[in-house]
Image 1 (cartoon, rainbow, N blue to C red):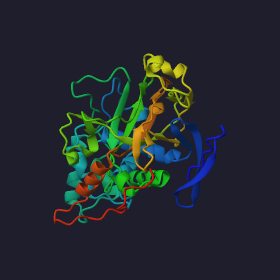
Image 2: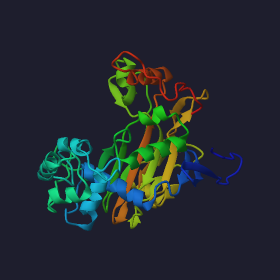
Image 3: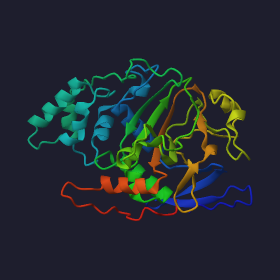
Image 4: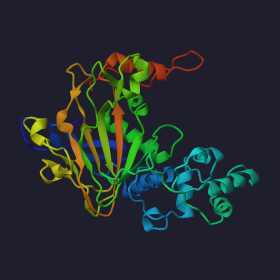
Length: 374
């Protein structure tokens, strides 16, 4: 699927089928790290829905929250109904909003709204709510809750950003499941690996927001273990680290100013961390590669090299990246990571444990042989 000529500097283009009846173009941006750009991974409308779902879930760790009545935060009753209607059948089931009852950081529905909606379910003969019934029981007086902050009550000022996590598995909004399927088709990895990876992280950078240069994944040694396989590893390692084989970064809006995603050492001949100096926001001014955020565009890069035997190898130091200063407006991103333990035996043990059923029968994964050429 990836056409790369290591003997030339030409950037190759290749088509990839992510959704029915459409071919997406994929352009190689860098070989170190292996980095691709996929325009139109999401439509502008789909990108907007992801942002709305993140706001519905609740954004935390903000240094400056937009007022509830601002244009950025406003939802109509029709839009809210569509977001809550996870299976898009035009009817709202109790199960579709049940999880919101346990949320304390929802930025769209207050406890007052939830009580009124639950009352509507109880009085509805069919036990479901149509759009008109939803409007009636909500009374047109949707009250907005407050998005949360950090556990210590203080926001993260340095990055001036808010974030939340959206689960991409079964029982979620149909668009989130579609994103999971597109990532599976894009990466050509077993669906079981993608399905069992961590939720998508949606981040909103405010004006003045940025992130320092960093690696998404980590090195593991006898002092550390992968967070996602830690319990299955039966290890005494005291530290848990993120093991993210690859990153799919979704640009959800076109920032009005700044906000580029920068890869400061992309395609360098060598990687010398001491030469880079302070890995802070200033790297944006001298980064080798900067990608302007365009709504719906995705970036795919590999955080690890191959071990030469079809499995995850060493951390690719050249995958260092960060978010440049947003000079005007907001920047929204969604990060989808595929978690794979460099220790193949630990990964396979984890896969077996999470597929085990209470009746004692192990459900066979959709792709039983995980040893594919990653």
